[in-house]
Image (cartoon, rainbow, N blue to C red; front, side, top):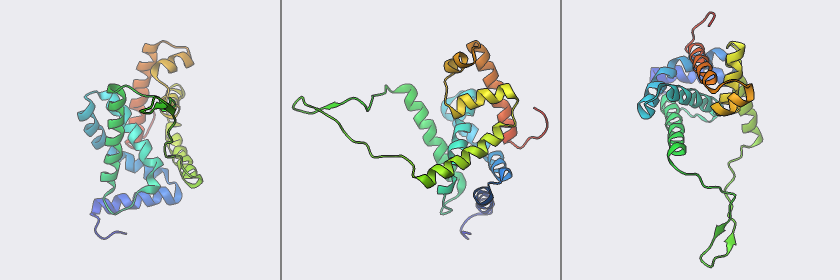
Length: 200
């Protein structure tokens, strides 16, 4: 263990090792409980909207857990986690403010000739795919603790990345109902992530 880490850093590293070595759901839950609120308040300060901040918090934790095997304890876990959250937030804000350009379209050079261009592959290798699958499995176990109707909404929203309109179409329910149920399901998920027990 890195002797330069603070007590908090050592605590986090022990939880991370438990999560990675044995897939211990309690270790993931404890990491979520410790960092859910600080992440949320940081993100709320950037987007100014409670629901969006909660969405971004859940997304950031999900992305961090999928990449947990990449964390190295040269610096504290919270710094690494908040960097992921900030980058995810920046991506969200860019998508809202900037027009998108299709990379499938051909570029035109100075001579007016069409030319294609190659992008470096970001595709994960087989080992990364396996680890990602394990992380998703843990997140799914947490989602399974939700009530059935909320569980479906969360899966569509966070695993399949459906928009609210797409969820309304998929489930054949009004958009307002989707938003209301999504809000309640998010609250339930936050309670579970905070380590609350009992019936929600």
